[in-house]
Image (tube, rainbow, N blue to C red; front, top):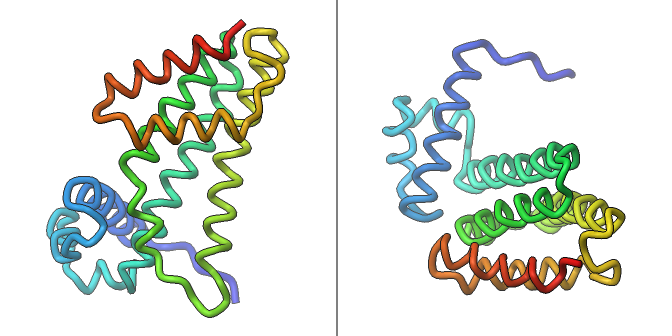
Length: 183
């Protein structure tokens, strides 16, 4: 049986809850009270649970939205006339994602079929593809060391996300990486 389209008010409530969940998780952490999510969304708990029956469902939706946005940003940046600027715009967004969302995937319970592992694989592939496409473009343009390995770049960038104490420091560390790989 095909899923029926949601009514306009149901779509609106879904988006309100998802937005509130993103904000609450960013501010209070992934174990924040779900009552706070419903309160900020301006909906009752029953409405919230109708859309997200478990905390895990809510976490998956928030994290999936973030990963989708990173993938879309990567595709959009492929049209940027400056390949290295595009690559580092995406890497800056990736650092922001890793530094602020690292607890979200850890809060997703696994199921007997290994569903969490499959989600992780899909999310990592989305991010890896975006980074690979941008890196390849910068390498083809002769702006980045052609021998640079994607895994090394992502490891260094992930290190920035974990080590930087604030956004200005992350930008300085990314500038060091950029200087090191640029031609």
